[in-house]
Every structure is written in C-alpha cells, then in structure tokens.
Image (tube, rainbow over all chains, first blue to last red; front, top):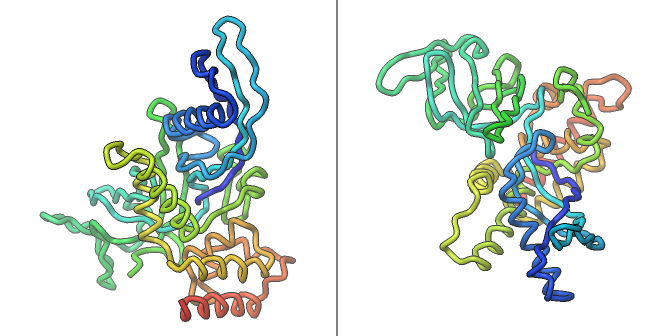
Length: 176
Length: 137
C-alpha cells in the first residue's frame, strides 16, 4: 500500500553553509533533507521511502555545541510503500522455481509465493519452467498475479523488506 | 505500535497510525512520482541516476494504474469517499477495481464486518460508479 505521511526529521547544516541567509539557507536545508531522504531508503515503520512531496515547516535552528553545526527540525510529507499482512494486491512473476515463485511488487523485489500456497497449481519443469493448474491457467515469468500478503519481514542489515504471499483465497491468481 | 502478529489488513487491523495516514491509489502515486521525476530530471539532468526504489515504484504504478487521466483519478477518490470507507479500503478498491459485489467483498473482507452499513446494494452502487468513471475516461 502506498502511504502519504507527515514526518519530522532533523537536518544538520554544517557551519560553513551558514553564511547564507533567508531563501538560500532554506534551499540548503531542503537539499540536505532530500539527500538524507534518498539515503535512508526504507524504515521498519514506514516501509520504502519513495518521494518527498512537500516541506510543511522548517523550525528554529539549534546550534550544536561542539561542532558549530545547526540542527533544523523539518516537518514534511512523503510517500512510502509498505506491505500489510492480509492486504491484497498485484505483482509480476520474476522467477519460477520448483518451490514456488518470486514476484516483484512496487519497490520490493523479494516477494515469495510458495508452491504450498498455490492451491491446485503444479510445477512443470523445462527451459521455461511454469506452474499449471487443471484449468490450464499458467503462472510463468512476466505473469501478473493477485495475491494476499501473509507476512513481511524487515531485514535491518540490508534495509529492505522480504514478503511471503499466497493465492489461497477467492479471486486470487493470474490476472489477464 | 501494533505488534507483527496482531496486524491483519483484512480486518483493518493495521495500526492506528496507518488508519489515519492517507492511503494513495496507484493512479495517484503515478501522478505524484511522474511529477517528481520531471522535477529531478530538470534539476540534475540525465547524469544522476535515480534511486532504485523510486525507479521501481514509478515503473510499478505506471503499470498498475487503472485510471490514467488526472481528472478521472480525482473523481474516483471523490466518488469512493462518499461511501464511508476507510482510507485503506478505498485504495484497495481503486487499485483492483472489482467487478462484482462478491469480488469486492473477497478483496476487502473488512467490508463484511457487521454494523458497517455496507449492504450488497451499496457495494453494487459503488462498483457501478467506478465503472462509469472508467467508461468515460
């Protein structure tokens, strides 16, 4: 699900950039914020940080004693993407393995659909492996699937999410 | 903060913070990200690569947008907002565009919760309204 939330982050401006006043300072703060934002990539609570939409407010700067840098609290709105357990959405099959299928959904590359969660589908090996059910419905690379999220795991080290999904409910499966 | 085990979007148990956060439909995100993309290209030219997360998301929403016209997208939100849906439910419906009442209740199970006043007739009306917008896009 794509979310729009309001956040407040602290932006640190080094002492050297502080000659600028007014608009130039504001610009420096926004540029630093944009930089911090794209470096963050994702957080456990918000999911993947995609884009900053508006800067709502820049608070008063506080000087940091030892470095002379100034810290500005900035309130802004941003778009993020997060998968919720029980959510139903669509993704594209990227790899087909005997144990199941790997999908891509939004910014997430590691969405796992286990064969045990693909009722009535059987693995068909070959140069282009696929999953097939008795109604001749095919699941192969490039197919769009509608699935339900069973769970999402936050990997702290890689700063990314892994998700487990399934097709074990009505109206789920390949979408034409 | 909701613990992982308690979370369940099918019952709208997604944490208070998220129930209040604005949920955006793919179509809305496509418009916002495209705009941002143009801005970034203007500012840094073709040399600076865009963050992977941004590129993949832009690709995804362009592919999975049901409504491409900005006017229609606004209309969809306006129309769906008249039905007392949670932000989350509105976005899922706008994204998947269910065709029947049965399908709508399957992909947004929280609609079935008793006492919410979403009888089949209301859901049918909602789906017809969506269909109208799609037809005249």
